[in-house]
Picture: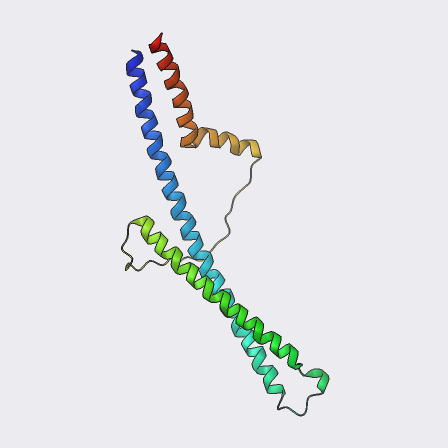
Length: 168
C-alpha cells in the first residue's frame, strides 16, 4: 500500500541521514588528522630553517673577529640584523605551528570521544596521494551516485509523490 511505501521511504531517509552523519564525522577526523601531520611537517621544516640560519648568524658574528677576511667577504651589520629578524620570524611561525598542532590533536581527541589526557600522535609522515584524475563529469556522476545527500533528495521526491497519491 501507499502508506507502507511512504513509511519505507521514511526509513530509507533515516538510513541515508545516518550514513551522511558518519561520512561527516569521518571527513572531520581525516581533516584533523592531516592537519596534525601537516603541522608536524611544518615544524620540522621550520626547526631546520632556524638551525641553519642560527649557524649562519654564528658564522657571520665569528667573521667580526677574523682579521684575515677582506671587507667584501664579511657580512654587513645590516645583513646580520636581517638574519636575526628573519630567525625571530621563523621562531614565531614555529611556535604558531606547534600551537595549531596541539589544537588539532585536542580536536581529534574530542571527535574520537577520548579524554583530553589521552596520548594521541599520528606516526606517519605525509605521503603524496597516488590518484589518477578523471574528468569533471565523472566526479559529478559519482557524487550523485554515492553522496547520502543526493540519495536523500531522491527519497524525498519519491515520498512527496507517494504523499500526493495518498491525498488523491
